[in-house]
Image 1 (cartoon, rainbow, N blue to C red):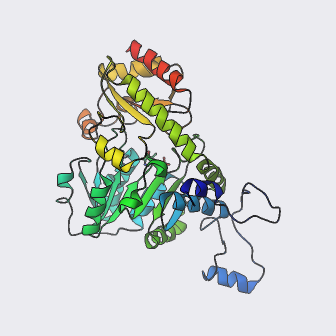
Image 2: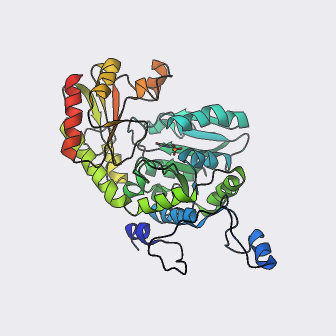
Length: 387
Ligand SMILES: *Cc1c(COP(=O)(O)O)cnc(C)c1O
């Protein structure tokens, strides 16, 4: 089957009602006919559900679809992207292990790595996202995992997955890739040697700004460890959210195609705009890692970022001048969203720390939605005129 078909057709077994669309299993636990069936279920001798912190049919359906989309052996869904990321760290690393990552990562992931992993004796170091010459030297005898995002948030750096996949294999490390920005429609890290792919399902996978969710897909032995850790520590995905997310995956392919074509149009039209100093989109020739992006991605994704000449003040002015685009913390919605990290998500960092993660004072990130591309461009253009 093609993956688009799997995302639409994978479905939990029909009930006696013969419903077409999957029903919602809002139940905390499951029943048994007799003592022997209950014993066997608890002894893990069956695939029976026990309790929705462990498993639930809706959660399984969503995870099974993600497993097919990423080309993985197994997948496990969690309450949020952060519980997927944290579970993949804590289930697979122990005191004395070392994690290799990049500073250009999602803010809460950065907090988990730098503030909480050291509390459990897990060391970390960061390498620059695009300077491949330093990655191998940064590997230590106790390095256990490489964790990265590509494209990075919000700078849209592209990391060469083929290179990192080979490096991880050579040193026998677990390669864990956050595929939130690209989605499996554009990029499948497992094909390049990733052992795990983590996602915030809150973003493009839902794509409609409704629910929180996360998922980890990859090697069966590793997913089982993450499952055992998560079912004991508790970040279970709600069946309702899983039901929403499973429906969302049925339209993921068509949505991402349109998000990406709208984003490419916006990027092409705004490139060289007199109020900006630089504009980044992975599928523009001008992107510094365009060749790698085109090699490993089927489209450039839905995020465009640019730098305003007027810096911090212009960033605030830009947000204030928008008439249609939403000012909100999320990304990956049908509705286009603008953000100015230096005055919002990253305002607490010093300017130097912001520079280290590629956040300049005038950086604007646009999550390009599904509105008509001309309406999106017109709103951005009139706001730029005000800056
Ligand atoms: C949002 C996000 C996360 C965290 O996901 P939540 O669902 O908000 O917990 C992780 N990684 C990336 C790249 C994200 O954008």
